[in-house]
Image 1: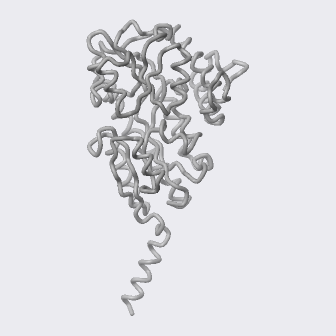
Image 2: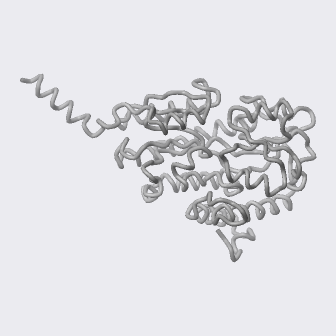
Image 3: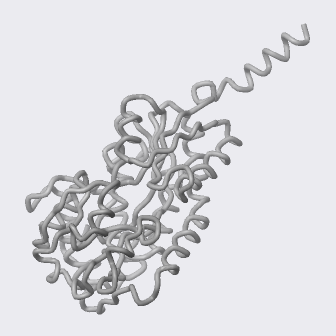
Length: 336
């Protein structure tokens, strides 16, 4: 009798998490199970055990395959870059909008805001929910020739461009460069063997993907963040309950410091001579060029698709203008 009572109590204890007692998660990391991204997700999963969720992590080195397996139901959740997860949540996927978050301080404000309970409704879209967002670093332009340091110099240059990243393709066409369709598994190889003149990636790719080979003696890395890239955990709605989903987003936000320590270490490990400094006037010009492109990608104008979420564009504009109120965009009639 006592055993039966204990058994009944144990069933009651696990009942709230019955639907998520073991959640299969496809995890992308270009290095695989030994990569920094996978280890970050492991830390997240370990902390989520205390909240009743047991993630079964499955490493993938091909992001397209990871997302494909999630789509086909082989995984209940997926951890991948926002460039790939944008179709599941346009709002959160617009964090990486070109030039929209110029500093890590602004990024911190963005992610802190999105981790708040009042942002929860925006984390749900079309039967999917964002369970967490963790930064992986600013994306920089890697070039094989240091003279490619202005937008004008990009004209005619071959740029490795992810073939599913519509905003990048629009931007490359805007500067009159040549789109060379690529994916996460081959863009580095194309840059390193000279098939393309430029590539776009976070600092970790310098060593991990050996982009120093493509940079060589004549190239470098333009020291200006083109976008802030993140890893996002996406699950089907109902895999965890609303309270656990919110706790999950708070757990991911709590990893911000750990992620930034890693990112700063990766950026500082790149030799100083490899960074290409650009003038303040060039930066101002880029910011306006990016802003015009964001407006087109928000509104579906100028030959662009509607890629960016208007509410995210408005939020990012407010954050930028709080940290830099004298910026010309803050008084523009077409402010985002």
